[in-house]
Image 1 (cartoon, one colour):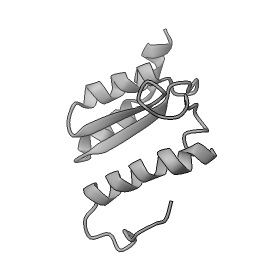
Image 2 (cartoon, rainbow, N blue to C red):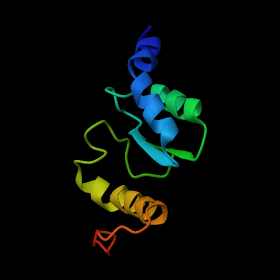
Image 3 (tube, rainbow, N blue to C red):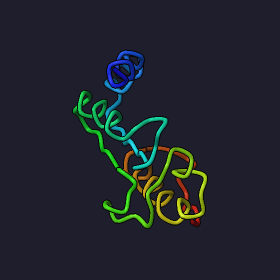
Length: 103
C-alpha cells in the first residue's frame, strides 16, 4: 500500500520533525509526488505545534496547486510566499535576514 510505504520511508523525517518546536507543511491539492492525504497523516502523527496548509480553491486560493506550482508559479509569489514569510517572521527569533521582502 502506497500510504504504508510513504510513512515507513519517512521515519527519519518524523523523528526530525518531532524535535522541532514548530513547523508548517504546505501541500498542493493536485500534488501527485507528495499527496496531501499522506502528508496530512504525517502532520497528525507529530501532533505538536504544527500547521497544515492545503493549497486549493476550497482553501480560498486562486487555483489547485501541484507539487512544483507551490513554489514555481506566478500565483505562488502572490499567494503562498507571503504566507510563508509571515510564518517565518512569527516563528524565528534573532534572525538577521528577517527584513521586509517585497512580494
